Length: 428
Figure (spheres, rainbow, N blue to C red):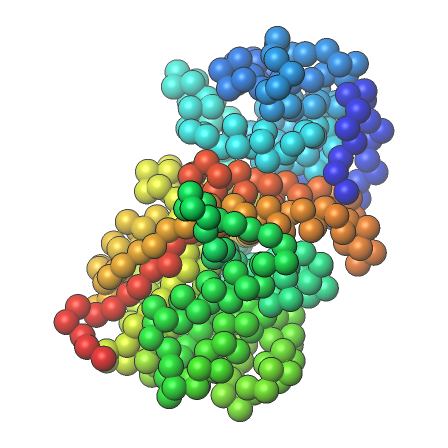
């Protein structure tokens, strides 16, 4: 369900303060709200945004064809943004203070060169609202299961509503057209997910007799496809919801004799393996623990073995600038996470392991299309999401999360890579 399209003031949403304390509360920060208004005017002029106020008025002159930010409760929006910056921007959407007829187009404009949204001379304003991630969300061995629970244990039925039948929650690889761009469609998403998995297994040279460790089970599709190649697989997860469904799906696929699913932190992995596969797991590890993550892979990888990772990445400078900042995504979607850069992966493996990055392959446009298909399916089935017990604040939160992520890949602010790690000079 998309938010109300009218430019008149929308009815205030009844928000449960026990579930959403910071969404239910509107900060009283008149000076900061005034600063936020001046900044919004500047962004609207420089980025070509059409900021619509109640009654159809415009904040600044803008042509009708530009991306639209529709403010239903301007003062609430400005107070939230003035108090907590982009966290307040997200919470304001959750509360229904603003919306857009094309959310991805709006966010794409904002995600382009985000470091220039605030002028250089006003960067000191960040000190007013920037927060550090709370220690309780640092992905230590003690905290990691709780962080995973907050996202992946929401409901298997929820994820089934917008994922394809493979239940694969990571970027697909679509066929490409003559222009080299992905050709994506909802009916083709399952095949595109299998293409991604097969490319990763090929990268790790998984075949008959291979001993495979998967770090991050998801709902079991990679383990099933590896087992069907004749491999024996141990796959690790911290999500009890994923564990239960992955075991059922593996049993139904007829490969339970070749796949073992363990409720186990990656740091406790044991055994020796010819191949290690890990799909979009490193983002949940957290920067302080990347050395332990790669050291674990190095420890369990047999001589001559190969590691194939799929990782969301960002430019190194942006990673460094954002690594100590608490963001809306960290607060509400992926607590304890950090998106790495390719350079950070190269540095961490070089400093802490005998592994080296042998090759990388990026395909961020494919992730943008994957997210578009998920977002369209999620919004189309909003009534079914509600029937599972998820309230309007949650539904708007996930709509923003999916659109925000899609915009990141469309601008190149984010990328996704398949990365091969090997030991130099090793043969197999």
